[in-house]
Length: 309
Image 1 (cartoon, rainbow, N blue to C red):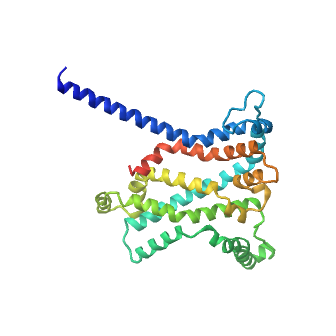
Image 2 (image 1 turned 90 degrees about the vertical axis):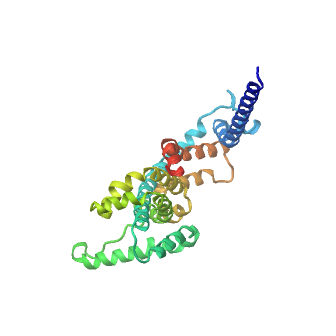
Image 3 (image 1 turned 135 degrees about the horizontal axis):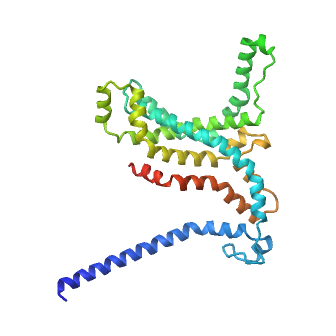
């Protein structure tokens, strides 16, 4: 064997050792991040006595296995899951679509005052939820009902008899209010994400469409929108996760028990003086299933959107 061949073999061994080390590091990272999930799953299938006498991450065993905690969590959270989906899906779609349109108008169309609008949108991202709770509740439960009641009873008083009342206490109306709130609150971050993505799109392609006589809406519908699918996946996943997992706005705007969302029912499930850890873990896993399914279904598009492809 020549010296050259020996050097090639040493280099190949070094590459294999580096790859083995990389795989070992990745496996250690996966185990580190999945360890809490494994602990939650094991706890979910344990009885109270089995949880007390075994380690949290250990299997329950044949004598300590039960599905009662999972059944209790599912029956408690099922109405909240439906309400959360009814609220989160429209809010996610509306905020992503409006964010895309706003970013298109702030990126590819030049007009006076554009920079000021961008600054206001960026500032809207950093407004904390706690700062808007009081005016938000006053708007939905006092200002808006008063305006609508006055308008309908004044303009259409001869039809309504002057007794029309805005159904602010109705559960589905409260879910609609919550959905609109999340959609409005999500527009700034969606706009910023789409704007950074649209800045990488070739200007020559848009200019060519304009020279062909295409309108601004036609350019958006036929060029920008098809190219935005990866970024739509990013914004939809991000916004759905934020809206679905929110508890603060739900506690303020939804006070009808039948209209409570999943996070509200999960908080009620975990409350109390005596903690049932197996039920708590089961509830956390059941509540996390929709977001997990969204990441699984749109994970490839999410990766492409993050990479800017």
